[in-house]
Image (cartoon, helix red, strand yellow):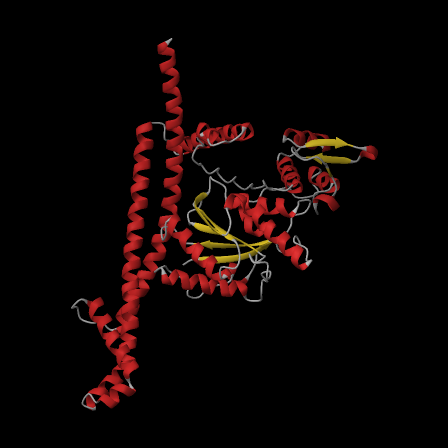
Amino acid sequence: MATTYLKSHKRAEKRTALQSLKDRFDYGLNPEKLGAVSSYLCDPATAHAEFMLVKNQYQGETDRRAGHGALCYQIRQAFPPGEVTAEEANRIGYETAMRWTKGKYQFFVCTHIDKEHIHNHIYYNSTAYDRSRKFRNFIGSSFALRRLSDRVCLEHDLSVIANPKLHSKGRYLHYGQWLGENQKLSQKEQIRFAIDAALTERPVDFADFLRRMETAGIQVKHGRGGVISFLVPGQQRAARFRASTLGDGYGPEDVQAVIDGKAPTRTAPVRRAPTPRRVNLLIDIQERMRQGKGPAYERWAKVYNLKQMAAALQYLKEHQLFEYDDLAAKTDAATELFHTLAGDIQQTEVELSRVSDLMAAVVQYAKTRPAFDGYKAAKYSRKYLAEHEAVLADYRAAKATMAELLGGEKLPKMDVLKEKRRQLAARKKALYLEYHKAQQDMRELVAVKGSVDHLRGLTDNQRNKEQAR
């Protein structure tokens, strides 16, 4: 069930049109994400310059600014996990782009494999190759693109979304709501948290309260006229200690009232647990350097690998995996569970498809059976056949489909088929929940085991060098 998204790209602020195009295309051509690439009327490596060449020719012929408006358009086309390979996805993306642009615009297709789902980034020039026109993003273009993508997918026997829904059930969330519990505490939230924590320790006076704030890592600054400000580590500007800045109940008078016993003691604040760092595979720095990466990339990769090793060690400690054999056994078990669930999902989807097709054939058979009965009552009249040829063809097709799907078994009642389809759909949903959890566990264990294997390899090499000496 491929999904599509259409977006226009304009010139970025403080960047030329050529630089803006190159910045966009560099993301699509990132070798760490790229699984396949194809192009039409351009070379992906120099597409930004070729796009601008056509635009400059268009400007010279029409006196219209080449860098004005949309420089190019991007189509994102994503496929469900396990449905296509990178090469198949790239071919589908190329066909979609060719039919969408009608062969009049330059484009190239980048297939990314860095996510669970394989997806295409299709970039096409906003100016026609023959300089006759510019592409206009018309009303309903996203809907037309989705219909075209669905048609191409159906032609390649791929699934499509029958009734697409709006994002977030018709509601759009702002960034803070989207982050949810994973968003970091703001400066004022950290100060309020520290104030609540200090007051729960029952300071004897205001000076004791300030000392406890400094112990918690909040720097206390004293300004003119006795003004107090708090500075959180990592921040450049301090926040004034007053209720109008920090919120009701967090001014000096409110804190003094709690210390004097005139206001209720604060309850201990509950802090959100930090999101554990996801463990990823280590980067082969030497291989990247042979591919032409520079010193800056090497420095970044070393820091990245150190972070991943630290995350791997934390994972081992949290899961009590202190023996390598235990880690290897758990990794193998997680991998086997993942593949087992994938097989169960595939089998369930096949059975669900069979039941759905059988139900559709039964409905079609019931609708067209009266026409066949009339044909039989007319003693197979040629005139009757000519008048009802299409309906009788549907009848024969439905009957043949039922015979093929049943395989000699007795046809169940429609209520039985509906219940079976409901059960299979529920089973598929439950399996997918287990599948995603098993996939995450497998990826973490494989990454952790890879880090441990890397460390063991470094240790073995060091031991061999010492023995050689």
